Image (cartoon, rainbow, N blue to C red; front, side, top):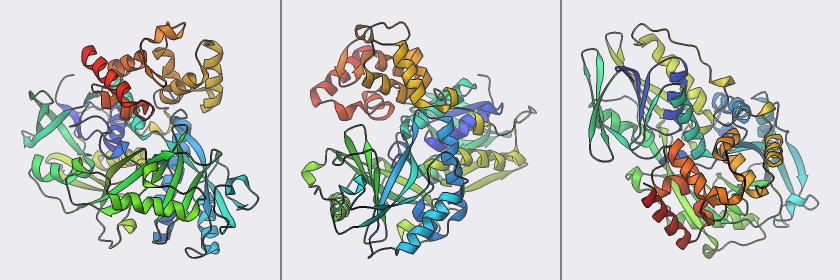
Length: 501
């Protein structure tokens, strides 16, 4: 691609990938660099929900909740393979929020965003409803409402893939070392994983580095920003699923926070999250024993099945780069996003992103580009209009956005493919499963079986088409196969990857 680029994006999380996708689709030439793997930081360590943020209503975040609720249905339509509806059961606890407050919040939640596809709230008698079987008998009433699940890491990759299909250059494992204004352009030094360097020029710079946004401003650019990022750690536990049904649970804790207990990866359960102020290096984030105990205690308060530390199969932690609004309570810090612009009509601009949540990444990208438009430096080329609200993400172009119908069609056309494996491919790749399976007529055509639902053909597809270069890229982010393989199977795959490389 010829330089200078119209826009150079620093950061390959969901915000950076979403901005690169939007900008490239508007006709801008785009380069995105990410110092690690795509989504390796915060964006693959979320609670994996597309949701309005029910509890944000308590903090009067009505604009944010409304935007998130609208986006919930947009993403459900555009990515039906990686976003799907989920029902949440919220047991009422008289010691926390009064019932009238919960009902009012859920009424607003049902109506703020113009809900169309998802069912509304209903009241449950936990002594009679099957959803109550897992709940202790002293909780008699619950409210059930809708939100959506998302495969967060795949959301990042699909945005990057679509950006690439519109001409963007995507460079994982490539760190921006320095950026300086020279001759009306940004001159950015990029360092690859092998230590080699490249100089890239760009008319505009987008700092979407998440937890590292201030490091880019202060260290890479050598500038200052009036805004600040506040790092908050969120940790999750993975245990065996211990209830029947597809519903999730939202549990009110005695510190006014809420804990999600969600079905995960078939027979597993994801429990989270914590809100802990974090002042260390974001690269070193890890769950603490106190966080594990906090989450288990919250679940055991409500659930008949008592969880113990030995039940924890796995855990992960992420650092949320929230905009610092000076709130004393980490849980009260806004999840909204704020932009900071450095530059004017006489010098190439840099826009830095502070805050945000995965649900609103697409609107964040639109707003970021709208913010840059008055300072547009695109070499005289026209700047297209916003377009992503109607464009399916790769693999999401299913007739009517109907995942179940597509899966049924795939199974009819490939009768040799076991049902659980067909669902796996359809869920992760949507209609792109056709390319992954092209030419295969039996299981032997999928190559070496590493265990679970993992075959060599999928790994080769991810290496060739989804920027995957390490075992972790594939086992932890592009898929969740690691959770279903033992140590020997993971080691065997790592050896296969080393030889394939």
